[in-house]
Image (cartoon, rainbow, N blue to C red; front, side, top):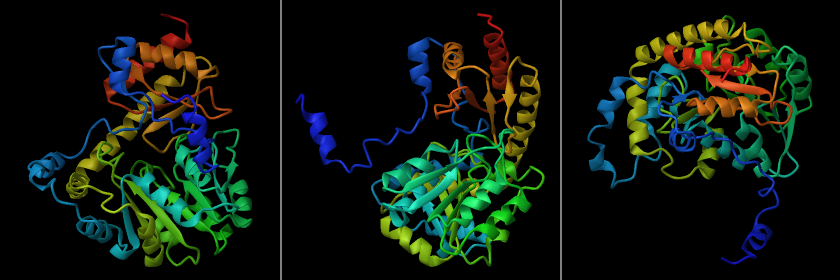
Length: 378
């Protein structure tokens, strides 16, 4: 191997790329088994749906082998029509991606560049910061309140300064807090017409059960700024392994610009078929969401009494835990027990752990393990 390969290739790269942090996707079950010798793995790091997708998905995927030699529908026509019928958004205002992060990348490729300012939250879903920086944009990060909630006043002031793009996750990932309807209306009133508002609603199905959660589409309709609402099939719909996300936009011109940078055939046959089948069984999704929200409350109550632990408010399918100590050793101890969670690595949050709400048995196992670790028991 050429010893000079790495410096040479870095010299060829755009200057924005080498400093970018790698997205923290976490460890796979196989890696944890191999490294720690754990036989039973509890996947509680990536906010996956422990109930899985509707049985209709398996039926839709059966027999797809005969179609893999042909390209999928590049426009996701049937899926966009189905989404539009339920949401009241015309298909021309809908874009579908290989996960909603695919659409985040399209947005940054289409609208962000050197000298542009992008506004988002800290701590954030990593790609809200990585993708704008990849395009050379400057990123302004807003802080949480001491109560681990959104600072609505700070958001309104920052929006009034006219960022090119504002990426607003509601509810927050990784924290779980949310803007209620009154706060969201304040944000909209503060947003200038020249700001593209990106509302990431990856966890909206869970948050819809929280009192005061806004009907974002109703509040956005009629507003003069450009906007897009991002949602996903990865969480509540149980399709994380197939990667399907969608965006509901203010107008067709925005979608047409995203189409200019979108990878052709970005959503494959299996993903489109599975998403359509899952979408057709909304009842299955709603039952799973209600059970997860119930179990989130059970888990939070069980953890509330642990020494030195603080729990952020959550309207999602996860909890953000302030351990009161560095998260690295706690994470290692959990991995040794076969429990995968996500230790947050963002500066200033190295004592936080995000844990997904799993099955009742997984939650009990996690709570028992964490209690033992915090109390110093092997």
